[in-house]
Image (cartoon, rainbow, N blue to C red):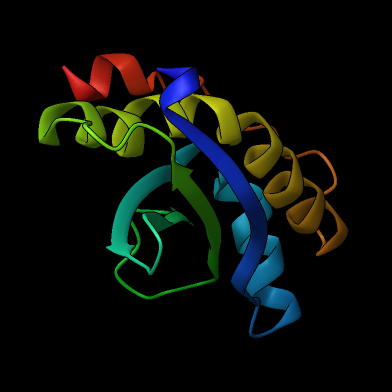
Length: 136
């Protein structure tokens, strides 16, 4: 599907790192194995057969009733659709799978670097997200 679209630009659209207090940071460090990554993908058409795709990563502890910290990155990617006769299901696969597989390593590296520089130096994300599997 690579020849059906082209990435025009990718950038961090929004970023939130909230660590309310030193106590919160210590709690986050102690409970980091419980944290989970959630991914959300939204898209909207732009002019001239371009699409803006927003990939949002939320890294949070689902077991905590009281929020100890909040970590989110919204990554925008604008793609140009090169194939004018593309089918809806092909376009869906590009947005939800092919594009995500391509941009995710860079997005994960950026997010991880920001979190490490925010007081979580030993942070490593768990297993990699398989967008092909999620799409199926």
